[in-house]
Image 1 (tube, helix red, strand yellow):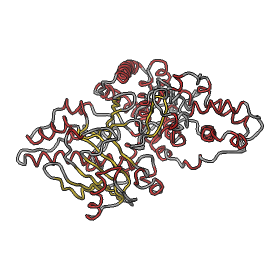
Image 2 (cartoon, rainbow, N blue to C red; image 1 turned 180 degrees about the vertical axis):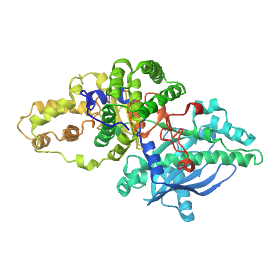
Image 3 (cartoon, rainbow, N blue to C red; image 1 turned 90 degrees about the vertical axis):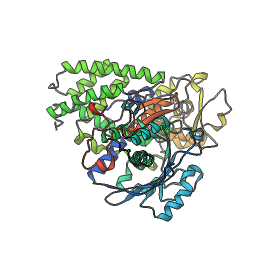
Length: 565
């Protein structure tokens, strides 16, 4: 591995004003630090083992299964309940009450009595009653066109159609994966001391990974039951081409606003990784080779990326063009110059779209596992440390901090309807975040504090009329309505990537930008917006299955081999 000999003269973290815009965040791609990859890397390095402890599902696809992941200290079990759902009841909407399959990640290995207890409650999801032994709740529906085709093909003794598999990419898609105390599952504090659960969303990623294994076993099982004499299993190459789909909507969008310290740590880890790679003075032959071998794989993968939404189609068009330009530029690029990765990034900022720039960042991190992977240990956060407000801070200091962080918001004319067009609220039925039209719906009284830019501008006006030498505590005694934004302001002064630089209630705001940013850190790919408010993704597509982790693991699995496409 090439050493970092010195820092390139222009090297520094990218500024928050550049990086934390909605358009930039809506162009993020998965990286080596994405949570799916972190999870599988841990499974491999710690030599986890896996066991199908229970599998009792009939020809109609009804029954239960248990899959255990056995680590050095703790064991976790996916408990799955399969259902034969009538087509008219199948829905991706959060208001659905029945699904093709429901799941929980159980702490330990459930006894038969525990499986029966869970059978009565897990299929009810939010309406059920779970215990602290349950770490997540999830549900999924079949992709009917592909599901029926795969079962039929395997039953007849042949593999499914490759083009159809590529077009869909999953046999089931989850409509929710709940963890961290929601609906009664174990609070994060219960698990935060366990190394395998300390990182962000590791429980949820483990749930999805095991769901994928169950789904593939289930489709082969049903094919065998339908035609015992002719049925075959999926070819390993074909099996890996299936991921788990996910339909994600507005329920996820406020997360980036509600967890500023955590989001800062995610972004900071990625930026530190990028800075380390940018600071490599001389790239080795091996590192250059790894990078160049990935470029055609990404080009082909993007060709395979399907969407019908005009926004994503435009972004895909730009990304395809960017990759052609990148390929042409690399044909004449001299990798033996000083700081080659920094030179490539300098070029990309002038020549490529935001999609192209972020894709290149994903690629240049790949050759540097030793520089990058350890940063995954820095991506959690003790958010209680950011809760306390510094009441002794002077108004003069608070004004300066507010101006530095929210300068973009202070330039907005908040008296215009377009600037205040939307309002975030929580639905009564499902307790899920929603985004309404402020001037068309009677929702203003239910508005949630998810518009920090506007609230900062309101606070700034009151700060300007206060004594600059007085304290924040005295200011809040007069203006308690600003307490939440004072806290955000002081926190963002310590954590530079804590705040989104964009108006989250603007008429033209795209919630899918927030979704894309979060999902990229999960490790999702092939983003497929269905509107500006919800998106479909694919998780773990190309990843090895549990029985392959110790024998056939390659860490670049998100980038499909050309012969696998």
